[in-house]
Image (cartoon, rainbow, N blue to C red; front, side, top):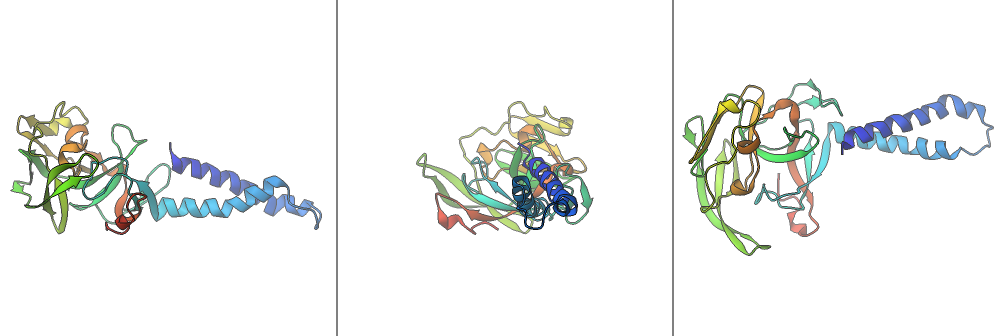
Length: 262
């Protein structure tokens, strides 16, 4: 569902009702005549819908985490806020960038439109920037020939499955974050390379390596062995970026999650 398009249509419809009444119909009614129902509802909803549309399009947008691919950073059921202008101001609905601002940095957690199906929003961590050579082999991440530092910490307990997973602190540039790596999971990526510019990637029994094309980004989930990400479906073009995730504002199952991510 394209919620931005629905909001835009509602803004236009209620705005036309408000403008028609304000500039024409109201002058034709008697001074003591009540407003017709279509004016009462349409006109009163217009400023509210307009405010929501502008806020959601240019400032912040709420999202709910639907899967465990970003565990332990983000959990299923987390409600997060996404900064819509961090990576430039874009026109709503068509997502056309009109003002250049910042670009994604390694370690950023980003919401983007899923390349194989842009009607879906995904959230992952930026690992590779345009021009980077990214390799993930034998559960080790390498960028431009240098292995990304990892430090073992306490195992992560999945309370639903009562299952412990090895947890590490990974450093991507200035950003430190936790990842999960299952030692028993296979390193190879099945069906790899079948995506646009897939010829820039190589796959073998140890894992994969890619050179990130210009204007694209390589994304990975923090739950490394339980994430469908750029290793499987390819690069994320700049025009698919939605914004940078920065805050958990609610979780029905755990109120302590509020504000735990930034």
